[in-house]
Amino acid sequence: MWLQQRLKGFPGLLSSSWARRVLAALGFLLVLYWYLSSGSLSRLGWRSGQPGDAAAVCLQVETKPWKSLSDGGDAWVLPAAGGERTAVKPMVTGNGHAVLDIGSNQLWVTPAAASGPAHATDFPPLLRIKPVTAYAQAQATAVLFREGVVRTVRCIQAVQAQSPRDCLSIREDFLCHRSRPHLYLQRIHISNPSQKVAAFEIFSLTASVGTKFSTSLEKVDDRNFLLYSGRLSVLEGKIVLLVIATKKLVSRVQVRPKSEFADTVLSVVYVSEAIESIKQEETFNKLRESAKKEMVEVMQMGIEDLFQEHQEMWSDLFISGVEMHKRMDSHTPSSETINLTLYYILSSTPAPLLDPLIGSEDQEKMEASLNYVDHCFSGHATMHAENLWPENLSSISQILQLLELWKLTLQKRGCKALVAAGAHGLMQGMVLSFGGLQFTENHLQFQSDPHVLHNSYALRGIHYNKDLINLAVLLDQEEKPFLHVSVKLQDKPVRLYACEAGCLNEPVELTSEVKGHTFPVMVTQPLTPLLYISTDLTHLQDLRHTLHVKAILAHKEHMAKQDPGLPFLFWFSVASLITLFHLFLFKLIYNEYCGPGAKPLFRSKEATTV
Image (cartoon, rainbow, N blue to C red; front, side):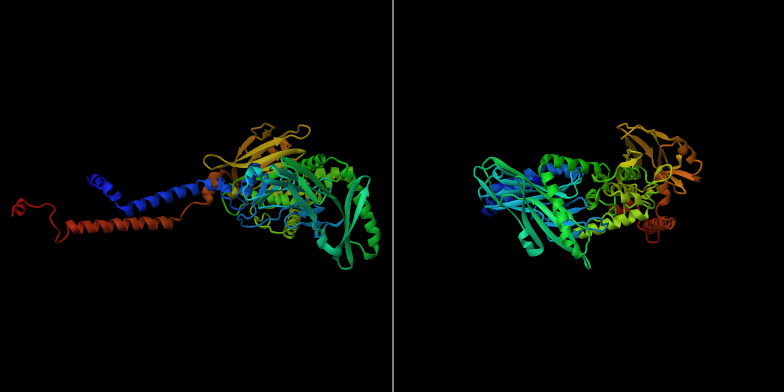
């Protein structure tokens, strides 16, 4: 009835002019809210003529493939210029001999025959590309882990009223070649989909270094390149000399409508060891000759061959790695932090196994150390060591400090041979340390703390006798952890066996099946490794008799004993309070109806008729 009366009065309400205005205003606000929240404004913003709208839309299209790479842990994307970000991480590419800081356009070099860290130079290694006319620009940068490349994309809105489809785009790839330690490249690709000619200026900032570097134009056959010579003061009384040869490009480029421009800047850097000043001229001559020779050699090679060669080497390094599937606490590093840390360490470390000058004997020793490293990694896992997996790194100096900390940690935990093997060894050591994997004389054991297995992660590419083992800690539907092991055979088939904690069950032979093998997480008392892997079946069968465990529990039972819940006193107090409350309530009811002066429960007929 109440609703019908209100509905009958509704037409009268609309007859009021102020009511109609209020309803119209509310409707307008609702439409505006839907329009803003649905993203329509951002998709069609370039029509409004706001600065950068067309460039921003163009950039979204150009960088769309990056999302799948980022989600898969194969790339880290720096937000578009102007976007909000909590911290700016260094965008670097390197090979241990040279490191390029893309953001600050700075070259870092390692002196020849030196085991110390790299040193910053005043030489700007990268060319700058500037459009002659630009109304607005948008830029994004990504680090591609498996390719060892830093890629930047710029979209340029030439005039105010321009569609995103007509925006100019500049894509640049920066890399320090992995197997050619003196070579770094800058690949440039400019696309002009518009109907007008686009002009660009290409220039270097080498003029800013003044007299610190001398410059000369070199001509070999029909090839021209620039040769820069400079010096660093690293120790008192000693200097380090460096010579950079770089391809000479034109200073201005015009890209015709509906066409593209592509070129690659090749640069070679040679660095001396720390020398006395009296040897300066002789050393400079040797460095210049070496730089000229390699520069002519790489200029004769195909650019795509150089890129493919580099990417194959980087891909080989990233066969090993760590993947974080599910992070349940803030102390565990994220996938982004893990991949960036691995990338930074590899970019700052030489790879002796890829050096063409390495002897066959030294190469065999390094490869043998990768396949089986006795007593590495000893001690507790580094998963929760925040100083080894830092979230915030802001400079190359901090990266170099982190590299030294990782080297020291691995050396003190029985991994000296891996550190000596360079980038390949460091990657192996970091993977072993993350999960607490340790090689012993006869087996590989997984000795992670059972209390951290609520996190789900995978360790891939663990070298074991020339085979690759993948070990993952996964969670079932009830959030209970279990172990998954798979093997990728690399050489002659070698039988591998595994058993869970205590080795009470018969060891299982590991095969290269795609589905792999699963093992329950069992916890022994006293605590022993959660998994054993060995090529010796007899060794694992004998192991059960040498562990001398008192008990073996499932992971869930172990955690229940470790965390039995709230103490008895707490539950006794709660039960007492509940009992006292009910006694008090009973007393109130009793006094109300049964105590002195209580009212009768039923009224008599006489009292009713009066």
